[in-house]
Length: 364
Image 1 (cartoon, helix red, strand yellow):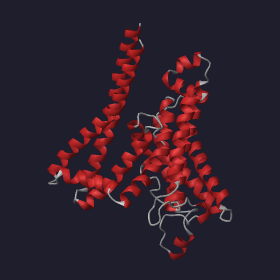
Image 2: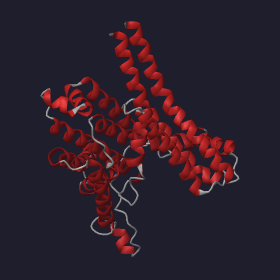
Image 3: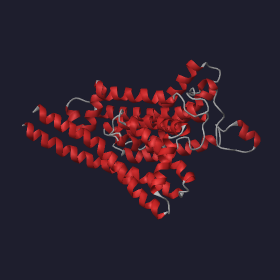
Image 4: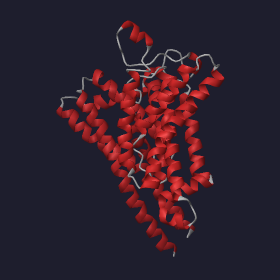
């Protein structure tokens, strides 16, 4: 029996590792066809992606910079999806977290860094958490579909951002000069995340992201709260009969997922932009979902997945300039990777479910 279980465990690990990698390889293969039709050598294009992401100091540091918010958002996605919630609201939660952290930083400029920076980051977490709590509460107590509510809340958050950047939070200098560029005033340096390498954008937020991923792993797999959230995600009916308050844990998971997305927004403000501006989320709220799925909805697996997609974002952005690839082809390659990675999640589940049933029969 032990030998059978070990064999099946090894098979599941192989499936979890190689099925996503195969999906990426297939996506790149199809992308190569589109590149060929555009009179671009696919080998040169993919070589450029790899080199631009890992072959220079700029590429390596930018890959880490882009992986940082992906790790944070992806960790929150792991919590939500493992608990039975489909959180598509990372964009809106990230925007609200960025807004609240900026407001706190701008209104407390005289505070020391050891106090202000943690306060700004916590504010971002709470902002995103409250925004995630709303669809969680609506689903748990009013049976509102969380996919619809989170998508609509994304749009609302974006419009709130536009309103604030063209009104109460617009930089006074922009108003004085009459330029009207939609951005806030620069936050005080005491709320900045420290730069790790001078001359680059790499900042200490990567450590926050990595520590957060480990904490999420410990929460989900080493605590009673995490066990209950995962139980609710597996079977809410059985969990309810087992004495678990399903509504509370569904809402809690969305609060935590939103909080981590909001923290990602705060990290972007404190580490990169040092102000609130249009496009602050840069699509990380959606890319974080794909990274989490590629990491098999595991906080630790989400880390290398986020670095991979961070490298992909850096590489494809440079591809258009280095190999003269049309911008539309770049989006095609990104979209193919997303589609195939998400698709393999369903395939892997079916394969693993079949393996589990076969193993149970062998054991019995």
